[in-house]
Structure formats: structure tokens, C-alpha cells
Amino acid sequence: MTDISEHDAEQALIEQVLAAADAGTPLCIRGGGSKDFYGNPARASRTLDCATHRGVVAYEPSELAITVRAGTPLADVEALLQANGQQFPFEPPHFGPAATIGGMVAAGLSGPRRPYAASVRDAVLGVRLLNGRGQALGFGGRVMKNVAGYDLSRLMAGSLGVLGVLLEVSLKVSPAPVGRMTLVQEQSLSGALALMRRWARRSLPVTATAWSGGRLSVRICGSEDALAESHRLIGGLPLPDADRFWQDLREQRLDFFAGEAPLWRLSLPPATPLECLDAVCAGDDPGADQLVEWGGAQRWLRGDLPADGLRAAATAAGGHATLFRAGADQAAPAAIPVGGVFTPLQPVVLRLHRNLKQAFDPAGLFNPGRLYPEF
Image (cartoon, rainbow, N blue to C red; front, side, top):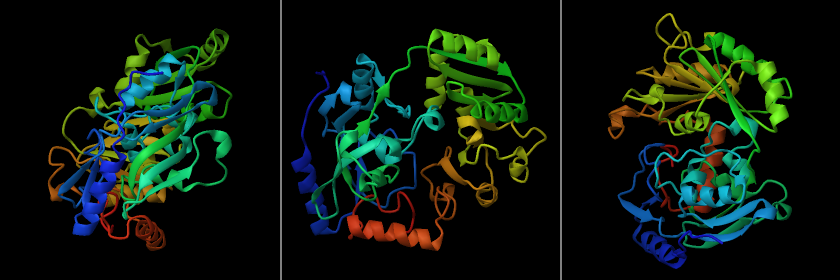
């Protein structure tokens, strides 16, 4: 079925977790290490290496679902899907060749297609994991017909490993598009936001949008006739080598992401006006240090910006702000804002998170402090 290497390291992982529990030693859970930069520094000196636990457990293309071990390289799984005319609908970023399926789910990050298809959480059908007692637990199922209602497996998406060690993940996949085209036009940021909102109200086959440096890019997918009609309605010029552009955006290789200034990610309602950031963005041009995608719902900002001001502005608009990369001094404690890289939780929500942590990992073994400083 595939040339992906197979190795079941579950028993070895169980033994390491049990030994850590007996010794009271916190563990830093690690796959390929491609997303070590993301989140708060874990308060753990010992690493639990999950990268050797790899292989495809089940894949039947007609079921539009795949089950793989958590240490399986993401690139290998995507190559397998591509060979069968399929893809992950959420277009996950890799941030390096060592990215794994477990890290993809634990980070919960999605690429340019996210608002037009699904998130990582939406695609999770089931998981197997180790809890803090060294017990292997299963939640959800392997195919869509076996999953109903809200399942605990989806809590693992974006949890950064604080709830358990992922062993196996079952995910929805989707057919790859039959055709695609990227159109580019010159636009101000305000004009781009207006156009993205307009396109969202119409039945256009848009699968990605991005604005930076006065240029608006939109990707459309579908049949030849659908692409031609959408081109007529959207306007702009076709972008050569468009696949590379979207890959470079997803992997943060565009010029906007170059340099060592801190990188902030704002998740906002798409209709949020430019003025919401006036108090924290310096200069006369509000888009000078911004890259906007997801139809306006995801906005990247670069620079030494005030954490409190950004978070207050994002919260007032109904969103939140994350310090995605702390810059050149990422490892230094002073580079992390008070309360951590993620917007601090309200007391009621924090209590719920703590209860979940207590249920899955009562001794606090897994990635302490990685998601929120409180646990």
C-alpha cells in the first residue's frame, strides 16, 4: 500500500511514561521538532521521543479516511494521499521536513484553505493516546460513519500535548481539486478586505485568499468552466507558479516572514475594520507590517508590538492574539509576554481546562506550561 516505514513503539512509550510517573519527572513530548518554536517553553528537562512510532494503520481511499501512527512523517502521508487523488482539506503547515502527524494535530495549525474547507479539529475522527497513568485510551472511530456527536478525540487538536501522548490518529481526507487557478490584483488593504467579504457572500469556488504589500491573491478551484466564470467575476491576472506561492505562504517563507522581529497572529471576525489596530500599529500605513489571509480572519503582524494592546484590540473585536514567534530571543524568558504566548483564559474557562488536565494527566507529566503557564 505504501513505502512509509512501519514501527510500533507503543510499548516502549508506555514504559517511559510509567517510569516518568513513578519518578515524578515531567516530560517534553516531541515528534519531529518542527514546531518546537510554537507555544510556551515546556517546564520539562526530559524528552519523550515519539518520532519512531510510525506507519499507516488503515487507509481505504473510498472511505475518505486514514489512520496513522503519530510519529509518521506528514510529508510521507501527504504523498500517499496525493498518489490517490486526495488531500488533507485543512492544508497543514509543515515548518520543516521532520513534521509528523502527531505534531500536526497537537499544534492544530491549518493553512490557506482553512476557512473554505475545514480545520484540523474538524478532520479528527478518532485518536488513541497515553494518559498520565500510562494507560492507552481510544476515542472516536476510524471512519466517518462510526463517529457521532462531539468526541473527546477533537480535544487533542491544538492541545500541544498537555493532555496525553498521541499514539494513533484517524483523519478525514478529501478529493484533490480537478483544477485550480490563482488570480492577483493590486489593492489597498481596505479594498482587499471589502473584496474578500464580497466574495464570501457569493457562490465562488474560492479556496484561499491573501493580501500583503498592496497585492491581493485569490485561489479558485474547480472545473475549467467554473474557473473561467470565476475569473470573469473576480478579475485580476493569473499567477504563474501559484502552487509555490501558496506553499511559501503556508510555510512562512515569503519575504514578509523574513527577519527576526516578533510575529503575531490575530484571529478576528473577517469584517473587523482596519481601525481596530490603529492604537498598536505604528505609522500612517496600517498594512505596512501586516499580511492578511483567510478572507480577513487571520492577520499576521511583525514588530515589537505591545502584547497588552494587541490582545485588548483583538478581544474588543471578538478575536484573540497569539505571539506566534517570539523573534531572535525566543528562548529567553523575557521574550514571552506576561500570561504566555496565547491570550490568557478567563477564570471560568481556565477552570474547565484545569479539570480536563486533571482527568487526563493528574500528575502534570506532559508538557507542563506549554499551552498555558497555569498547567
